[in-house]
Image 1 (cartoon, protein in one colour):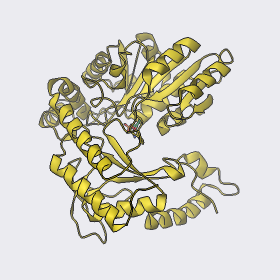
Image 2 (spheres, rainbow, N blue to C red):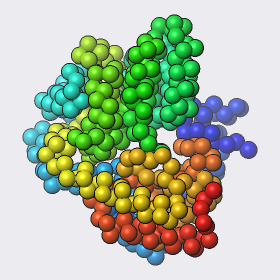
Image 3 (spheres, protein in one colour):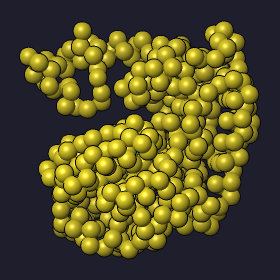
Image 4 (tube, rainbow, N blue to C red):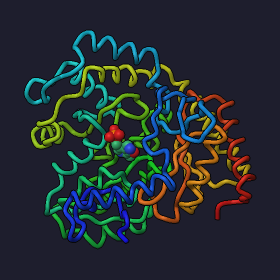
Length: 417
Ligand code: PMP
């Protein structure tokens, strides 16, 4: 039997003896079975937006309203009146589209303002925008790393980084394992034109943080460049919400910072922040910037959400109250949240079949959380992944904790080992 090994499209079309249509027919049967068995709420439609409570219409589930822990809208800015007003004002001013790539007419004044603002946010010179965080990563990696280079990836970096390094040499190290990283740097020093260490700031499945200080030291010692994607750290980590870079005061030590506007900043789009010359190079070398349409006018609202990170710091305070309350409650119930140190709080269940069942009972108890299994995480590391928001109340957190307690009793589970 063919197994769905990972989420890369390459695997789908490389099926021996099958062309894409034959493989699609096979895959269709496979996926219908998979959806019916474990993943019945994949692409579940929500008619409410990123609210702490959402309406869902789940077949066979009597509930209509659920406490939702599935959005990366950590500070609630998708719903913030000032952010919405900024999007509406920009649409009034510019219309709804840009209808050209930035290179040939699509570049508007809000793009430049956004580039300047996100660069300044990280105390750096320059930035370049992309239409998603995924594209920012693939574009930047493809433009900077060539056949003579080596990409050294933490195994848990986002899929977009893996895609971006397909045309260069790649080695991976066990997640956050500094000995393995050092070994790779030592063994490969001098063998390539340049070595690039590629990490996330906050890792999206465990919700833990890169030991950036140690990584910076290793990169300096072995002469490697450092790329960090802190998609989940911005707005959440650090006294002023600059992310993992702020914890280590590593402003000048990360050669290339990438990120997204689609999580804390509440909208859509990606960016790369670096020195001016590198950014200028990308303006002419990143095909995804040159040949793809510029971000729509509504993205001018991100100017406001970046301001709000400084102007309304109480959202971050609220968020951490919720995170700490939830984690303490889960630990009191004997549940394992792994290495989480951010707004991403997983509960490790280990077993994929069990994970699906836990998710189903949580829904029955009115809690909508994501079940994450293979191939997103290793087979024995299945988990329920919860994203906490500042707009959740302590009552919401209590609903979640009561649901977990109920599920544990219902399934007669002491712990998930
Ligand atoms: N990097 C990380 C670490 C992510 O978790 C994500 C989103 N899943 C991305 C990049 C991609 O960002 P976007 O959704 O804006 O394409």
